[in-house]
Amino acid sequence: MNAPELDPITRAALEEQAQRLRETWTRTRDAVRAAPAASSAYARLADLAAAYAGMATRVGRADRARDLVGDALAALRTACMADRSDPARHVAFARTLELAAACEAGRNEPNAAFDALRAAIATVGRFAPTLRDPDADPLLRLAIGTTLLRSMSAAGRMVADPKQRLDGLKQEWEESRRWARTARGAADHPVAVEAAVTAAFALAVEEYEDSAGDCLERCERLRPHIDALTRTRGDDAVVRMHRVAFTRLTADAWMRLGDLGEAGVLLTEAGRHLDAAAARPDHDARAVAEQRRRLDAQRAELDERRARGTGTRRTSAAS
Image (cartoon, rainbow, N blue to C red; front, side, top):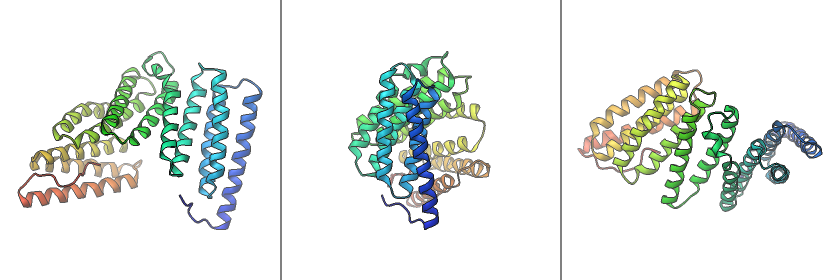
C-alpha cells in the first residue's frame, strides 16, 4: 500500500515524532526487562508499538513498523512466558499480534495475517472465563473481552468456508452474550451489550443470504439486545445507528419474502432513526452518509419492485 504524499515539512515532523516514539518504546522495553513491572507497563509497550507503527507507515516506512512490531512481539512473548497467569501482559501480547496481522495484511500476506489473529485469540482466549466471572474487575473484563472479540471478528471475516465462518460468528455471539449477562450493572456492561449487538447483527447478515426466514428469526433475537443497549447507553447516535442497520436488514428480509408493504414501513422507520442519529452531536458523519446511501438504494429497489408488481429479490442490500 502506498503512503499518501506528504509535503516536506509535514514529513519531517512526522518522522521526528516517530523517532521519539521509538526511543520511548525502547526505554520502556528496557525498563520492563530490567525489573518486574506493573501491569500497566505491558499495555504501554503495546500502545507505543501501535503508535509508532501507525506513524512509520504514514511516512512510507512500513518496513520500520514491521521491525518494531517484531521486537514488541519478542519482548511481550518473553514477558508472558515469565508469568503465565498475568492477564495484562497476555492482553498486551494479543493486541500486538493484532497489530502484526494488520502489518501482514498491508503486505498482502493474508495467511500470515490470519495466523497472527489465531495466535491472538489463543493468547487472550485462555482468560475468557474471566468474562463469566461476576467478581472480576470490570476493567479487566473489558480489556479481555474487547481484545478477544475484536480478534475473533477480524479472523472470521477472513474465513472463506461459509460454514466455518458461520460457526465462528455464533461462537463470537455466544461469548459476547455471556459477557453481557455477567457484566449487568457493572462499568463494562454497555460495551459488552454493544459487542453482543454487533456480533448478532453480523450473524444475521451472514445468514440472510441462505434464508430470509432465518434472517428474520435472527433479527427477532437481536431486538432485545438493541433494547438493552438503549437502556445502558441511552438514546445516543451509536444506538440509533444500530437501529438503522437492524431495521434495514429486517426490511431487506421482508422484501425477499415478497411483503413490500412491511418493507416500506421498515425503511421509513430506518429513515427516522438515521435522521435522529444525524441530529446527535456525537454522530459519525461518514457512517451516517454511508447508511443514507444504502437506505436510498433500498428505497429505489423497493420502488422498482412495486412498479414491476413483484417481490422477487435482485440484489443484496443489507451489507
